[in-house]
Image (cartoon, rainbow, N blue to C red):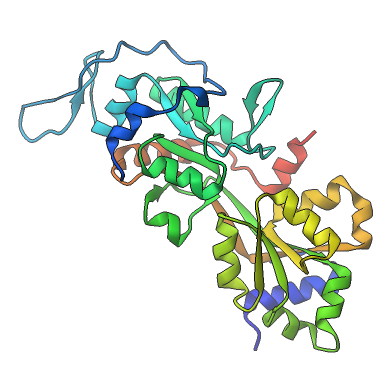
Length: 311
């Protein structure tokens, strides 16, 4: 009997093609100044002062310039006068991209909100050129947190802590109709999906490499530097399908409906990519603070709501 995710995919193919299926703290001292792309409007930070642990009792709280006693990781951010946020250097609208010289997007808005709640401006470090690179930037202490529409993976979970989910996106395939038909032959479609052994395009150094290995173990994964390269590969038939989240896959045919003649989409209602924020492994209070900011937000964004926001 085919696993449930694959049966869901089969149903989608038959009906419409789309169903709802450390190195150390010292690294902070050497953060690159040239990585600034945007700032959050926030109150002017208090002058930095040397943090001091309160001697009374067993408290590990740290005094900051305005006299407050804060957890060490929060005090570090307040005393340094900014929240440094690691973000992928490659624009990924509508989550983060430069518009008229200003960084904007849903992930940018959330980062700015966290900075506002902490009472400090935000500086975005966009030196990382891969998604895994964003996690590494946080892990070595070059940034206080990282956000780039990233999901938790086993690899990343060994070097950073992840927040609660702030957005869920279903998994999806963008399929080259001709190449898929050649691969399927006379085999029953459920068997083709269950034993998918074709070439599957993914973004290298991203969560989709791990997801592909886990969910399509017999597929021949082909990694490309960018999503644009993956799309080009599936259009040209270099791969049978491209694997990513429903939002990115849906945008392809939305932007060019004529591609439906050669491509089709399949989304899975029981596989999702949970978008989360990353912090360093020692920043437990910061993590709890971020989770509270996420919890206090109103309506959580969805693929449909984000698509509607795209002009």
